[in-house]
Length: 131
Image (tube, rainbow, N blue to C red):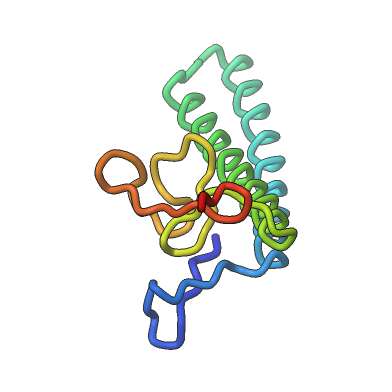
């Protein structure tokens, strides 16, 4: 996965979002990995059935990995959609690192900062700005 870009001194205050091409490259790799893991899961389930030895913990673990991959793909999609909105002058709330905040997110998808509660450090941009 890509790590957040920082300024020349590594200062997170000068955060620069990864270019869309890097996000698209990561998304493509994740989708390929997802397809491979789905095939592996099917093969695993078939072998367990053939041997009459079902291991629920293993199936749950593999499914959790797939769900995590899908969640990251959705985050990347939202980042790509958000960056398109920002380029068009729209957009929603952004974290202090500059990354768009996903709807319902409890943490920033880029820097991991906690969102909500007393630690809210997000600012509205574009059409959501008041004033």
